[in-house]
Picture 1 (cartoon, rainbow, N blue to C red):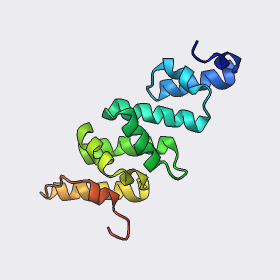
Picture 2: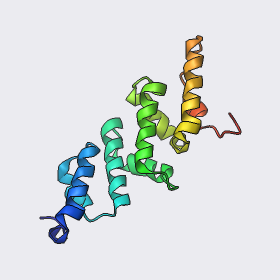
Picture 3: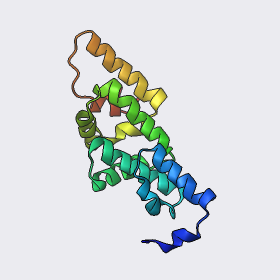
Length: 149
């Protein structure tokens, strides 16, 4: 056992909720030993890091750097994943490579409000595509400040 302190934790109050979090986020259940002693916030960040590593083939260092840049405010961790899950099909046509390149180049796009900024801008992207514009560079449009848009 790599961490004997885990044996002193409550099964129902700590271990089970952490296991549920791992399973809900698609993480390896064996990671329960890694997150059982972490705060809820840190456990959610661990799962987000695993998500970015798994879904976008980021290195652990890249995922950690991305999260440090994006989670500077009190943005909920599940909200960040919702943004990614919205952007992937709607702005990047399910291309994980395009989205990976975009979020590494300009992570500020993930700081924007999903309903107030991201969705309206994606609608503009889709409108431009529908009338024949070849919109291939998403970053500037998705990461601009509202005053620049």
